[in-house]
Every structure is written in C-alpha cells, then in structure tokens.
Length: 138
Image (cartoon, rainbow, N blue to C red; front, side):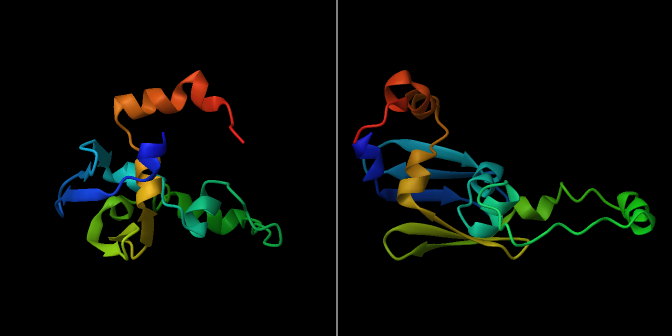
C-alpha cells in the first residue's frame, strides 16, 4: 500500500463533456473515476458535513414550516442537481493535488494521496476490502 501513497500522476485525461477523469500514475497504474465519484469523495468541510461527517453541533436544523414546505416539494427535487456533477475546470494545486471547479461553483482539492487511496479499479477495491488491510499497524 505504501507505493499507492507516494504515487504521482504523469497524465490526467478528461474532457468537459466526459463523464470520466482518468489518471495515469508514475507506477503505470490507471485510475478511472466517474465524475460523480469524484464529487462524492470531495474532502472539503461542506461536503463532509453534507454526508453527516463531523457536523457542527452548535447549528440547529430549522424547523420546517408546513405551509411553505408543501409548496416547495412540488417544485423541485433538491437531492438531484445535475450541475453538481459537471466539471468546468481542473488545475494543478502545487505539486500535491488536483483542483476541480464544478458547474455549481463548488471547488474541490483532491490530493494525489486521496485520489490514489480512492482508486475505483477492481484491484484497488479488492485490496482495500481485504482482511489484511483492516488491521491497523502502529
């Protein structure tokens, strides 16, 4: 697993209308991420909180108003926003990360380590799910 942590990209392939971003690593491994998968692993605080990770305890949810809530439900489906999954720009962030700008004006920074650790290929998934990887080494 150590080699994955220290990987660096040698090539990044993506197109504005492509549903995939492919990274070719310096060890010749290829990672092909669906754009939605990238957005799902966005490490920013806003996205982590949306997923229920590390929520602010001081902020209390607003009590819904039954009169306005019913009319809002008929207008849209807030959970599905296609623009959320469209990349408008990508750039290198120093020599450690990939910056991604999304159609909905969100900005993500994916470190090479995170992208390597989250590689969706079958061999990486199998390695992450293997019992030997579940043991913590100190």
